[in-house]
Length: 587
Image (spheres, rainbow, N blue to C red):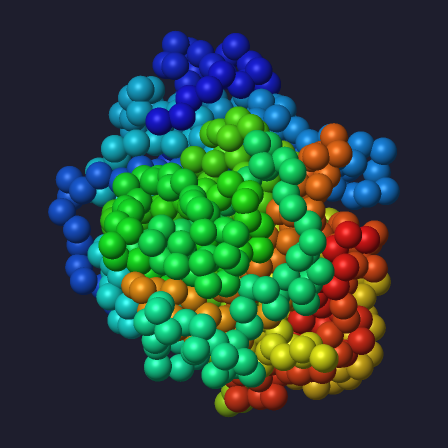
């Protein structure tokens, strides 16, 4: 349980949280709906009600007193044109910026007390504007939230979660509580997006022969380091710079497979290693490596060796039916001091934006903005099934059928303002996929498109209209032209060899692109830190600005999906390759 004193909280608020203040509480009737699905989300089915005594931990996102203040700070420390560029905040400084108003704390704590929640069960979490309430029984949560928690199972993966399809709050709390987790968010980090490119695999002892016989289909790390101009750089700040990999479920990397991979593909890195941090019951069994974990750690290490690497194994869904893995992982990271957080983090997981409630998606994205303000570069894979995740949202109205591309979350992550589209700001960097070389082209699997939830950021205003001029009215209605476009950058995603359980396998997917780009960014951060400068932090203002000359424009390829040919790469930004790939990162 995290419970840190936050200087921005008034003495009264602290007293309330500790149960020492007892002002008259407002009436708690007049329940008003917070969020509801009209039906059980696609591919989920109810298995009935869990036992009433099943305990869940509730996370409550509270409205910050200084609404949008963190956005201003984030841009000031992330835009190279700003006089405070690189002046990243500490954990305590972020907590001051996002702290709730004392009135909010009073109302929420009074409400919890009304329902018999002891103060010992309540603590601050997730950077300071969330409360964590531990050990609430399902039956009690149903009463408090006007909900009906049930056990749901995903029909394709068999993953099970305890969720509700609706919940409500007293009307007086609307505007004070932004979202509650877990409630109606059925999504979970998907691991099946990465694909084996071919069925055949060979033993490690046959690696050299295998690579020689498949030069056209293999993109080995030495090729990536040559293609992206990182070969000659040797990290110098390995005591002050690290690269993190987010892992979920049972996707574990193997030290033995990593060593074998490095022996073949980056010989001097035979001694490469990684630390494992287990969060919320996240497991780790190196004897049962997974495809995703192996790909992530092997390509991050191959690009950034000997930079220290940390693999975060976060439990949830498979480990605890009541947990949300993103929230648990972010809660752990945001509780750490800056010196204990990697300067670069790669995540190869995601889900459809449409199946995440807007309120949930908004609050999670705001948590990523805290990492950016603290100097952390966060990169997400854009998806592996083409435009809109390769799938469609099909809707019918007045006898007509409408199709809509499904963006990938959190790759589409931005700040959301329901009342004003002008106030926006994406907090993660989305990484698409390419293939071939001379020239490098956009890969057909590259996820890309436009967010339905989140608005176009200011720094994309100079590039997205140009793409629309080329697109014309093609796919009109399939996407939101005012939405945040993704991906932001790309890297090779096809023909990537990995070692899994001692065998070489070829895989494809932006799950390989993300750690590759993260490795490049980690080298940039190493260079900056070694020169006495600050790490890059939130990347996008730099990528779309002064970092643009270091990118190679991808002008061909497309990402078919949803029974369409998808978007097409053009000169400049496009929703297939983004702003393209690194060509000369030293610029």
